[in-house]
Length: 290
Image (cartoon, rainbow, N blue to C red):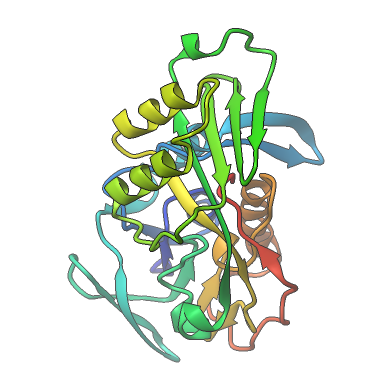
């Protein structure tokens, strides 16, 4: 019997977590990711589970672990994205930016706050997303950048916060700020992201110059606006949303929510066609620290 094929858009946290469970429950998952490689940034996150000890990890480390666990079971397409979805009762015809068109039984949008798949469910993002005027950025640091691995240090000045976080393995510098001039959100314009951070902290002292330099020197530091999203439904036909694409959380809970959402969807019922809209979710907040 042919395994149902599911396309997962996004290789962050929610996507690989879902691919892991799908592959172990009789499905054939394919993960497509617009970036050329796994994202290296993101702040430290705490993973909560009722049946296991709480674990803290960097978002990059957690993403790598999840991705590695699915490499032999799921096909992964990097440097590509979905440009069109055409669904009917028999499945979803998917058009990619680079790969050849393919047919899937279902599509899961797990590609974060600014999901490319979500407009196929809810319509244009501008109808449902409102920027809060705040931005979050982070960059991985060398171990010697932290004097005491048991302490987190924070500096706050008007409209800006700077955190040195030891994490479990790789230290992080975390920037949260309100920009004088709103930055255009272009996920691929890394130079713009770096310059926005540098401009925001140009007059901040302490270790800010050193940490800004670390961000400027890093090939792909994390950067994202903080956004409020209201969506009327998490599904439409055979296309369903998961993780930050559906509901987001502030203060680092998004990764736990994403993995929790991926797991029960397999234990209760398969995520193959969803024919009725999900109930309208509450207001959700996006965070650069997930």
